[in-house]
Amino acid sequence: MNHYKINSLGFLVCLLILINIPTMCSAQSSTESGSPRKMVKKVYEFSRLLLENNKTSLQLINNAQADSPFVWKDGYLFVYMCEKKIIVAHPNSSVINTPYLWNLRDPKLNPIMPKLCRISNSEIGTWYEYWWYKEDHDETKPESAKSNKKSIARKIVFIIRVKDTPYQVGASFYNESYAIEELNKNTSQWIEENNR
Image 1 (cartoon, rainbow, N blue to C red):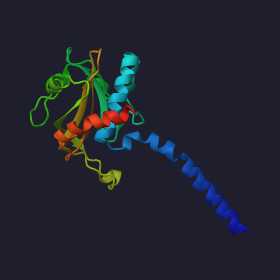
Image 2: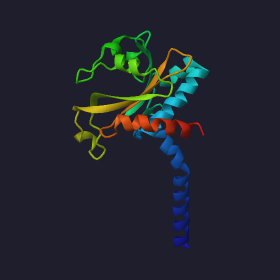
Image 3: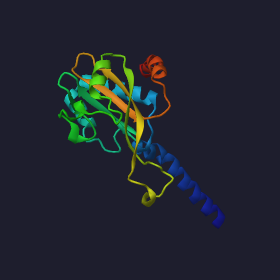
Image 4: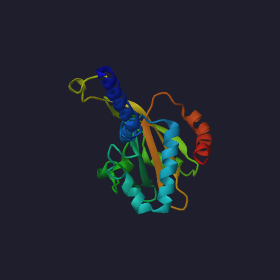
């Protein structure tokens, strides 16, 4: 009889864990890594929100927390206005509505925002790469062993111009291997998948 109770309790615990897995996973969105397909999907989802109600939509990105659908482990969404040379939505509120990012260059001295504005005239979207500082995110190390050092790493960004608005929406994440040409080639297929 005791054996039966333990198995029933064990079964109940397992069932509760299985029921809560989707909730636990969605709450951990900031621990998920980016992927090109995911970035295209998020940019298009946010662009539709922006067309419906731009002020409310912009607030979804501004000061976004770890549980936001627009922030993930190694990247995030952002919105900028090339005409005004400013970022209008970003998880880091200190860069919003300032010209700070417009003049910013990557560690290899490439301008970031002017280049993004030059190539973001596509309503389909395009990919770009730049280099940025990346913090140590080695999950195998205990918190006390992680360094505060940053390395220079390649970051890729997918950007589109949102039709009938002054906005460009982008999403970026760190990646050393995806070829920009290949990403641009696959974007149409990923957009089609999102529209199904």
